[in-house]
Structures are given as structure tokens and as C-alpha cells.
Length: 574
Image (cartoon, rainbow, N blue to C red):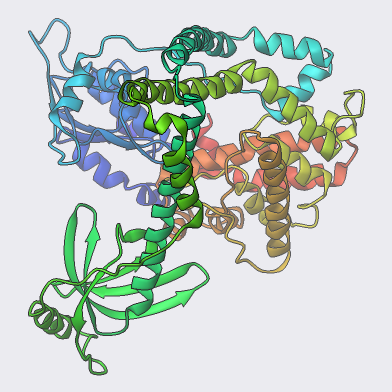
């Protein structure tokens, strides 16, 4: 079965994808199934599983998507996953989908699901996931730039907004808004009742409340400023050899300062902990100002080895508790507010205790009402507002005329369907990639599709020659679009990343798969998927270039496509 599916692979490709180890494990009943595998190997795993030839499959949640592969038992290594933007908990629906594979129909009386213990997650959270039986369907629909120009190509702006506001996504938002609007009405009625209870025979208690609230906020801001000042003064006092007590997380630690540097991003403190390990800490790492316990003289080079740092830590244990820095400050505005409060007629009211009780309820309800009003305003006609902001952005960039008609750039944008459709259109319109040779062009296009499996993204403009110029132009285009989005409050497009550029250039210049995967530290499936996405974007760019009469660039794009669409990439597309 495996030999049949992989018959078209060359010996070098088999070496690159770990074919022999895959076969060795599969023949013993073990296999993996994840997004980084080649599609043909995943298909092998699925067919071997269905045939009952596998005993254990190590898989990600991709195994739970549309594949009929029940198991006797399911083990979840972690309930936390990377969703492309951050590490998040599995939802109740994802959890149920994964453990729902436990138990083979007609074979097992019951299935077993095991969750590996994780100190970060309490048992109640897992129980909550397991006991949830309702999974809301939330629409992810949002208007895009390409969608906007396509709608305006056959509808006027008012009609386009009407269509968006009749979508399922807007229906869900409106239903939520209806609940909020009803709550706002109830809060307003209750607030009127509280206002009556606040009537004071001695004076205007509403004004007294206002002064009280202003004083509370002023004191809160003063505490925050005082804490920041204490932090800055405490860190400025640190020097090489300072022994400090500092909070990190929930615990207090003792440390020896190895060095302090002052840069544009603030103060960076190098700290040796009591195990002789070295940590780099910035201001935000300190939950409160460190306390100074004493000072140790560190001879030159004494802190370079683990043994030397451990000896310094041993000396630091001899000091007593650190002393806290206290800053005395005087705030004239707070003093004035306190005077106004104490001299107000309502301050001496015999019923002030009752007024304060109703006042607390009034302030709490007023804050809730203000928050709900902001939410109500933000969510009313959400998609229509987003569409209008997108149209404004397109007006500024020259894609729409004053009467909302498509310009030549607008017609160009119609042909592009991608997450970064506006960036791709600007690249074509500004001829940012026009001077690139086919192999370099293929590499540059990868920056439009690649999304790293981690938190660090960026164009990394550290190339040379024409590619360097093209990547800098791409960064400029993306930055200008992002500034316009931020100015108008538009949901930003995803960040571009140049992490695949050199790898794709290597592939486009004829390198073997093994060398390409090694250069980019990529899994075979990830590389093939990204390569096919590059081909798709190139096809769209060719269509756009042809429509604008730029046949030379269209021909160059065709050559770049041919350089990518070869070997395992072409075979995986069959």
C-alpha cells in the first residue's frame, strides 16, 4: 500500500521526507498524522488505520477533521494549542471532537480518553470542557478589500451595505446587540430610581458623588505614578554587585546584579539567581520595585563561569531582607478635591451613610451602563461600518473614484482573492517585483503567503541586490496600508513574513528537496503547502498582469511558476 502511493517519488525525495523510518514504524504498527506531513503520506496513514494495520497514531487535531478514524483510546498531551496568533485553550467543541474518536462502533463497549496532567490547568477547567454540550456557531465572515470592489462593480454603496447587514455574521451581532440594548434600558430605569434615593436635604448629593469619584480616580493615578517613580528610582540605584530581593511571578527571589544597561527600550538588568543562573530582566518583568539588601564586590571574570556565579549567590544569602524605597509626594489637586469633599454641605448630612450605600450602587450601575453603551455603539451595524471604512481606505489609495466607481486599480483588485489582496495589488500596480528574474520572483512571492508556526513574524529585509530592493518596497507597501488601517480603525491584514524567501529561491534554482528542507528547517508537508500557495498567488498575479496588458511581467510570472511547480510539488497537486 505504501509503495503504491509513493511510487512516483525519487530516491532523493524519499531520503528527504524520512521515507525509510516512516515505513519501518508503519510496519510495526506506529505512525504520525499532522499538517507538516506530505499529503500522500497522510493518505497512507489513513488507509493503514482503516485497514486495522496501525496500533498507535501520534496525531494533531488534523486527525479529527472529516476523517473516519475511531480509536480504542485517545490521549491528549495538552489542552493548549497554538492558533496562529497565540497559545489558547481548546474550545469545548474541539475537545469533544478529539475525544469523540475514542470507542470503535460495533467493537468497543466504551471508549477511553486520557488527558495528560498539566500544572497550568486545574481539574475544574477540564470538567467544564467535558460537560459542555452546546457549541455555538460563530460566523468568521468579514468584508475584504477584494470583496468591496467586487460588490461595488455591480451594486451601489447603499445596496452593498444592505447585503452585508443581512448576513449571518451581522444577524449574530444584532442578536447580541438586542440583549445589550434591553439591558441598557433596564439600567437606565434603575439609575433613575437610584437618583431619587440620592435626594439629600442638605445639598446636591450628585455633585458630592462627582467630587468623590474624581478624587478616587486622582488617587489611583497618583498611586500608579508613584509606583512607576519608585520602580525607576530602584532600578537606577542598581549596579554591578547589588544584592536584591525581587518579585517574579508569585514568588520573591534573591539575586545578584551582574550588570545594568540603559537603552532606548528602557533599563535591562542582568541578574544571577541563587542557583548561579543568569537572567536578563526588563522593567516590565519586575512586579514591584526590587529591594536593596546589600552589595558584593565582583572581581573581573568572577561571574563568567557557573561555579563563579554559584559562589556569588552563596555570598548573597548572608544578607538580611532588602529595604524598600519610599517616595513621598505631594499632590495639590488631590488636596483641593479632599477640601471640596469635606466642605460640601452633603458631607455633614445625618443620612450620609444611607446616601453612600445608594451612591455606591449608583456609581457601579453608571459604570456598567457607560460600558454597555460603548459596546452597543461599537456593535451596531458592524459589518456596514467596516465596509464603509474599507471603502474610505480604497478612496485614499485610488481604487475608487469620488462617486464610488472602480478605477483601473480597482479593476485590478477584483482579480485577487487572498488574505493580503490589497498588498498583492499594490505590488503589481507599483511594479515592485517587475525587475526580478524568475527564480528571485518566486522567492519574493513566498513573502506574500508564508505564515510561520510561531510568534516571531517579519519581512526580515536582510537580502542583497534586486531582491533586497523588492523586499524593502514590499515592507513599505505593507507599512503604508497598515498605517491607513490603523487610522480608520480597520481590522488589520496579517503580517507578512520573509522566512521562506531564501528557501523558495533555493528550490526555484533547482536544489534538491533534502537541501531545501535543511536550509529552511521545514517539514515536507509545510514546504509543499506553501509552494502550492505561491503557485496560486502567481496564477492570480498573471491574470491581473494580462488584464492590464503587461505581457512581459505575465511571462516572467509563468517562468517563476514553472520553477516552483516541479518534482514533489507538482506530484502532490495531482
